[in-house]
Image (cartoon, rainbow, N blue to C red; front, side, top):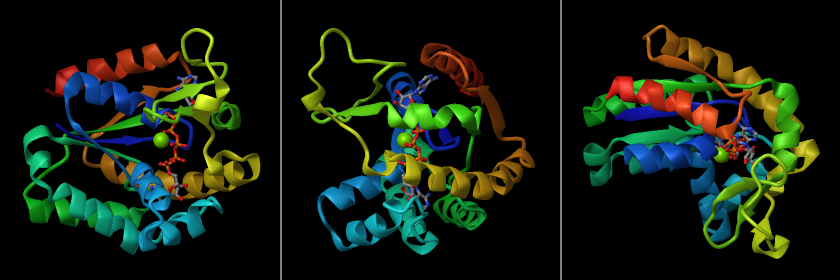
Length: 213
Ligand code: AP5
Ligand code: MG
């Protein structure tokens, strides 16, 4: 299956992507994760990405389209299928993805659109903690790690500061609608209620994906 997962910052894309990958064995391609890895390795691309991400702005389309194209061209994708998380995020990226898929002889099977009330997102992002060793995402209140956990084993994302979150939300709300319309016109969009427990969100996604298979 070749899938997109869409939703505002904090909607739960990464949380649900981890469950989808575990249950449906598709390759997870998160542009945010790719940029954060490049930032941690201090590559030239990572330094460029950081200058945008720290301000809550989008990394330029040319850079983002390039890394996605390179990843989609790798051999495992044809075999396993993919789940793109956080891409496309501008209508220009959506058009670039159409071109890339055409060139590679691939097509999309579905778009998972997680819908959430924007008012709850600041709380979700300010409470997000990520396990340093495994990269697994938790929430201090909504999804705490099991048992007595050591806070020092977890970190918070630099761009989860309230002032940066506000800009991320504004940018994503402005850019997102035309992208969803682009895929809705092709009958690919599956709206998922994101204002419910993580396990209930996944149950809804699982129903959609089981029917797609
Ligand atoms: P990216 O890493 O993609 O960030 P984002 O889109 O802002 O989304 P998040 O990862 O913050 O949220 P999520 O939806 O994955 O939520 P999560 O599951 O973690 O991108 C970061 C930056 O990189 C961008 O701002 C941009 O600068 C750049 N970038 C990336 N892609 C780009 C592109 N295509 N073009 C240009 N620039 C790009 O959940 C959030 C929290 O809520 C967690 O703590 C979780 O435990 C909790 N939670 C999840 N689900 C629930 C639930 N149902 N109920 C309660 N809590 C929940
Ligand atoms: Mg994410």
